[in-house]
Image (cartoon, rainbow, N blue to C red):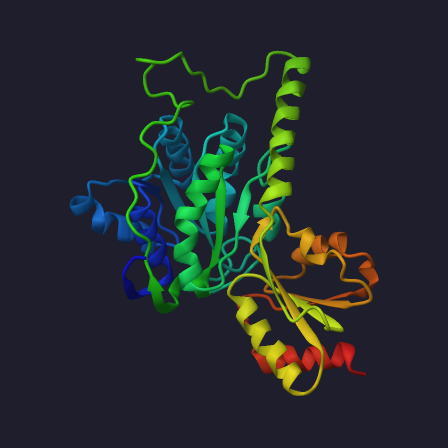
Length: 348
């Protein structure tokens, strides 16, 4: 167990990534993610890190693709507009089986929008913003501790499946300060057997994303789909609270699930049987969490106009028992507001 410190969310993730052996950071400043490149720039001389402020987010995403191809751990951090620019590289890295980590510190859109907390990037992160049939693992932390914990986990999953991993943060969690236990130091893997790092002592490696006719490219895509199915089968993550006897189950992710938890506790204090499911992986979406939950109503709440609600409707047996409540523009409901909405919908 590492040391316990009081840190801001963005800085805690950056420090945890450094301790996980991520020595390469490429990024373009964009609020509310900018503390990460600032932290890496500050720590670079003493830690022997490589930090480059790229000319654009497009460049930064392609730089992490390049360092990933050599078998080294690299990352970038951005917000929604920057992630949009990086989607072509995300598609490329997925096809090339390049393990990399991207942090998306979400803020309200569309376009430049605001610089507060939001969850409006859900579709962009989970459905694939780039071209082709590809997927990226998406982790959604709800606390600074979990934010820091997801740095080593993200690199482990990326290297296990040779696939990009996205950590879905937001402007609230990024700026929040909490106690956090940092991980022990790890150098990361010494040498990746698939990497393009010189063929001395091993066979030649080749990383490509170009097809050689439809038959070959279909076979290539089918192998990718088999990998994605393996991820679906083995990496669904969630937490659930008091769902066994619940009549209504709130579904919320990220830092906003803390508001949902408080609303659930208020309902329980009033004698109402309310539970909570908190998806941790947004992709693969934890459909297993909804198995054997029959004759229950589901109240999905998000900081957007309704995006995860579509996955919940696909996961439950009766989509007509799913209600949605969201706020936009960086507005975050209080637990009282959420509780009152719950009562309005279900306690008539």
